[in-house]
Image (cartoon, rainbow, N blue to C red; front, side):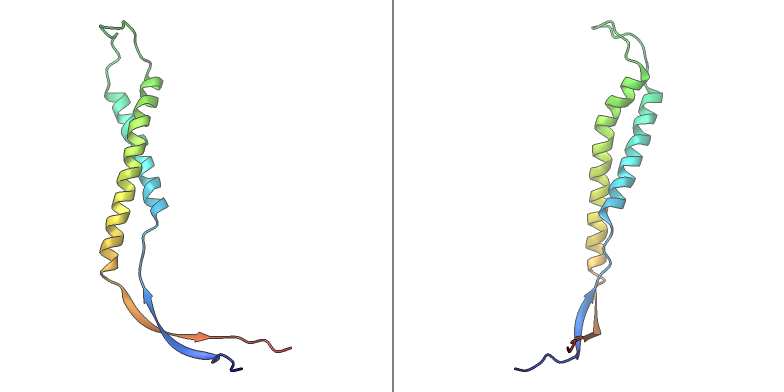
Length: 104
């Protein structure tokens, strides 16, 4: 039975990949900021049809239901685009691979 060679040189591809979670978290933060801006800009006059006034907290919550998922989607899309751009800059490098064999 032949033992594996303890040291060999192989080729490996080095590629930079963006962290999707970070970009999506930035999208969440931007969605919250956008909801806050929409809440501040909105008018709080009684509705002509229902004759109700929605409080700013409720308007902020409704705005979050739209802006946060849109921010997550846009953050993920930016990460995918950056990954495609980074894929063009892949590098192939030579690395030394060592195998450690313990003998009893």
